[in-house]
Length: 300
Ligand code: CP
Ligand code: NVA
Image (cartoon, rainbow, N blue to C red; front, side, top):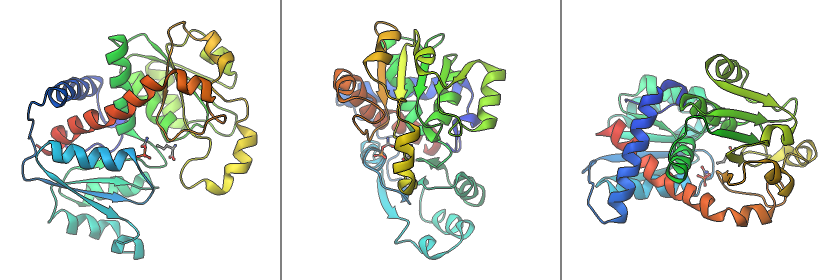
């Protein structure tokens, strides 16, 4: 695997390989078994948006693997003053062994990979969030044993999370349901692909969608870059909340996941969030292990 630009580029068996390696790296970390697969290598981490989990887990992940990580704020790079991505790609390729980038346009990530000569990992774009979904799949698999045939129901905005959950879930043989209001649906090409390649349902009725679900998932109503729309979105998404009513129609032992950061009483009630905090924070921890697997696959 050269890059991780989006989950659509991976096969189901490549995703399984990543999850297996992630489980192994988690075991090694917990048991203090060294796993310095990237000794002497440096990852550059370009951030054009805020981050807590992605930044810290990639940085710690590189140290765990024997390498180092450089935090590069896009504001302070020349890229923030208009230096083209195609030039940045060729320059950074001469210093670094890999790049993680969090930005707005998916196209910038693809261009970085095309013009650079080192692995590029997508740390979130407006289009997708593949690293998060690898950690999500890892969390479901470790708690439930397997993914195939399980129903994953996403409630909320048809955003980067929804797009990656659809692709990752379908590739792993899950039944995926998205409950999004009209006008805020996931990417049309991804929905079409999902309907043609697996069990995919799109509905605006959350109680129908959540019925019997094994995993309920939600994300913020206004993503990074949509702060100006927050007020309007609060009105549109009212009702698209994981709460007791939704939990009562899901499977009895349903898991609840959230990529975080969470807005209590918006997309999820504080009560449901705290009742499932164990799963949600394990999911956050698994970012570290899943990404280390991606780093090893791409950079070693
Ligand atoms: N879930 C996630 O990507 O978190 P950060 O924005 O904190 O990196
Ligand atoms: N949809 C959210 C995900 C944050 C991890 C955003 O893009 O802000």
